[in-house]
Length: 119
Length: 91
Image 1 (tube, each protein chain N blue to C red):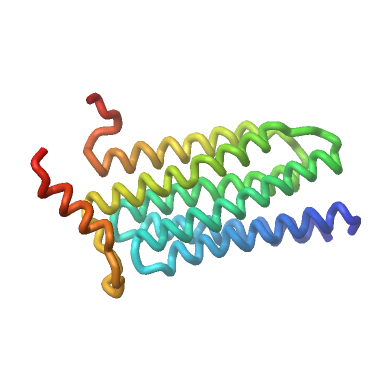
Image 2 (cartoon, rainbow over the protein chains, first blue to last red):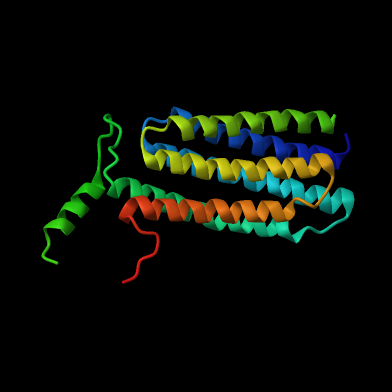
């Protein structure tokens, strides 16, 4: 293996490990908020590192500059937190319960106060 | 050696995709399924990225962009739909 392939292997292995970790979190966490946390953070970082490896492979080995892969990195990096926020807010507003061992729910007080206020 | 590693990583990504699919089918509530579908799309992007290295082609770069956009738009539309019953707010 050349030095370039070793660097690419490190990026690819890190990405695959983080993606697998995100999926394990997705199936092991007890409620939807924990699953959002696991799926968004680690899977996004894993995909970003795999995309960096793809970009470096085509740049260093094949000699092609693939700008679309860089665009995909930027897009995933920007949109994954927004999607997680929307899903978590929809889950809370439609009344999906927290895990029964959760000790704190600060958002409940805010929503109760907003409901009691005259519109 | 590098090709063997790529094959192993493809297998790992397949396991990851399968786990997301299990959560999509099992998921007790609707937001669970939406999170799992979003994660499925994101893992699919990584899968296709490794496939690009295996086949040494840049033909799939548009596929990556389209899948990322579709996963994002689908997640936003579904979560807005289960929150209010409408996708577009008109006020």
